[in-house]
Amino acid sequence: MRLFFGLGALLAGLAGALGAFAAHGLRGTLSPADMATFETGVRYEMYHALALLAVAWAATQWESTLVTVAGWAFVVGIVLFSGSLYLLVLTGTRWLGAVTPLGGVAFLVGWASLAWSSLRR
Image 1: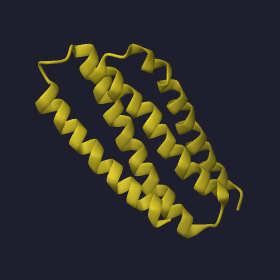
Image 2 (image 1 turned 135 degrees about the horizontal axis):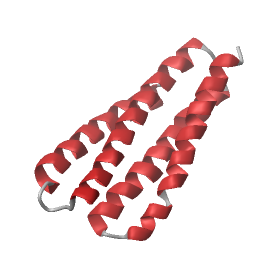
Image 3 (image 1 turned 120 degrees about the vertical axis):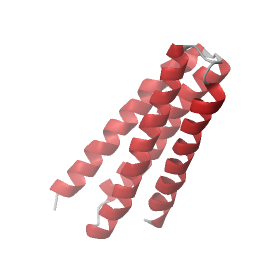
């Protein structure tokens, strides 16, 4: 599960960098609503990057394919949820907002899989 630990660390660092970019590079150029949307993407990326660290830890505690499902669901969720918000704000392509809920569903699948994997033992 080094992969999920590495992805978690990488995505958490990226969230920190994107948050700094928003605070210093985008403030004043985006509307308050777009800034809030971008910051939501950063926040959820960070939450779920940390969740990937939890997945890596869980994989060392019990063997379950559901732990792996949870990890990939979090990765997919970050790409779809946070990625769509970043692109929506930076490109103005509003239809990307329709992709965001798919990322939210992936996050829910990840959390449910992680919970179920711990309860199945």
